[in-house]
Image (spheres, rainbow, N blue to C red):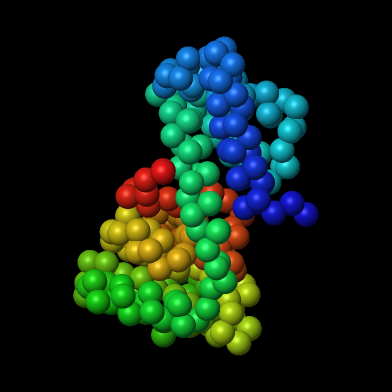
Length: 217
């Protein structure tokens, strides 16, 4: 079975490489409108020829729809560059996730004024409401805090539930070494909280959330 993390990098890097080749040959001017038009056509061709594994099919369809609905405003080139750069940044580092790493992250969130809860079962428990006093809340399922680890190593996907400043959460998670994958902004089974997934070794099955501050070098 093809790994999504590998295939999404293959996809965006292939597109950017072909774009750069067209520039080098003088067949395409290096300008936002021309680059976006080329990538929209490239995405459509990739879909028709089934050039990539089906695990990235939804991404290709989404980008094709963006190209059709937004035209020159779709901005596929910066999207592809951010995905390529962000994945290269995280996955060239040691990507194994441990319970100590998560504990340090939770301590950091608390120091930034977030309310952190790990005391209640949340996954598979139906609709749940967590009562907190603060504006920003991060909740982890107590059962997952035990069952998702083999020794210190994360071996199963965890759900992290977030209320409040989602952008700050994504930024701080990235700084701590986590690539988080959004399921929903707020309509999770934990009332008023959005849900994000954290995968073993950061190898998710969808595009990770990229911090607003991330700059492509």
